[in-house]
Image (cartoon, rainbow, N blue to C red):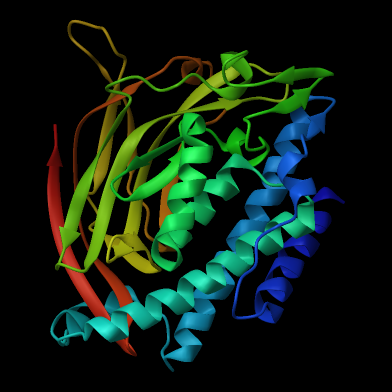
Amino acid sequence: MKIKSYLLTALFAVTLISCSKDDATTTDANSENKVLSFNSEKEMQNKIAEITIFKKAQEAQIIENLLKRNHLEAPSLADLETLKNSNAQIDEKAILEDLKIYHNERLNGIYAERAHFNFTSIQSIADEINSLTLLNPSKASELFNKYAPLLKTVEALTSPVFDNDVALVMNGNGKLILKNEVFTPKQNNEVNSKLLVAGDIKQGILATNGFFSVTWHVGVSEHKDDLGHAYYGNFTQFGGFVNNVLFPTWFYPVANSKQNFVKPGTINPVLFRIVAFPTSAGTIVRTDDAVSWNKEYWNKYVPTEGAVAGTFVTIINGQFVTISGSKTIN
């Protein structure tokens, strides 16, 4: 029954995106001040899953719109060699026009999400800032300053300070109610995730041609099981940017693009976990290997050596643009 509910939510997300006006408008004050309340960890995780499915459906629809608008089909792995040899000069005005269309659609999606759930999360505020950086820089700066204690900006991407999907159910003050207790990041790190320390995350720019860039990220993520017990995962991630703002990208890493993770603080660290980089389409794509039932995941393992390389594709002015890059991670 719960899965059926999620799928209906996802279909509604697509409908909202398709029917939105071109000019996005902000959400109402009620959803901004609302605090979500959960009777159990499981109930909270169900809501996180519901919101995640909604957001993924939105992004898939926006990418489909991008392809249809340019009369193209999604590039496949088999197309890469041909696409590498077909890059042409791109006009700056064409880049800006495509960015504006995409980020207006993205803002419409963010506001549709808030309207559907009658709730504004700190994650959706970060998402809004990432689009307003292009469309309305002064408004983006105003929002960032307002919510600065809970936000960070790294490699052109604004996100919540904690690497945790609980950000989807926290309001702009970082509050949520769990088992009749109000929690904020300052009051209770166990619910809201510990702030990650130096060494838990590594990141950088993998490839760029001056206007189209792909970033790489590896690190530790914290999760909660249905009983509230913390466990850790490790992730690999790509981000796609055009003119330093998020833009849909097809990510094709080579087969041996992997990151190693070891237990921190040991003299002779033993390799525990290997996580591959994701092959996917989107703006931010991630592989996270966390599983709650494995006791080994109750320990935190940090990134050590790794390697990543690949070819990455986006669409500007009706044509595919590709870049390639590689990185040895130490």
